[in-house]
Length: 219
Image (cartoon, rainbow, N blue to C red; front, side):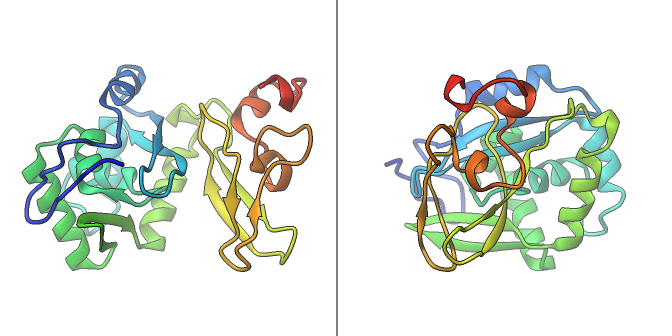
């Protein structure tokens, strides 16, 4: 497991966010567009898709969220849109100076739109504002944001208790397990399905969406 001792400053020697994957996504990113980066948390082992937004889209969104002072802050909030991240991973994702990442995160916590907790000595942050989440959701679902028609959110329904949870699906990996937050049943794909989203989700995984005639076992 990666060691990280972030406190008053970012001091992680090993980071979960792969900088090469981030760089590839940034090279594809249009000013008004979005890209998704696959991220595997080394604490939970869960793989998620993390949002990157272009400079122009970030500027546009920053003007609609009172708590955000500039496009850098909006890029940080976009990174927290679908997952809880350590501050070191936020820095890797946004490529912002670490001091700027810490300053912005502290501002967002003080304003109440981001929640903070310490896990194994690491500072973790998550988006805690429905208003900000809806603003980001509306912007990235806009036709000019480069969505390509692929839906990345799917609501998983537990077959045991009926509990539902909406998650952002990874774009380049299959999520084989998902634990129900209500009854703690560990869900796994049905026979012939590649992931829990294809078995229990309201929307199948991105590879199946992009290739409708494709069978799950071909993914």
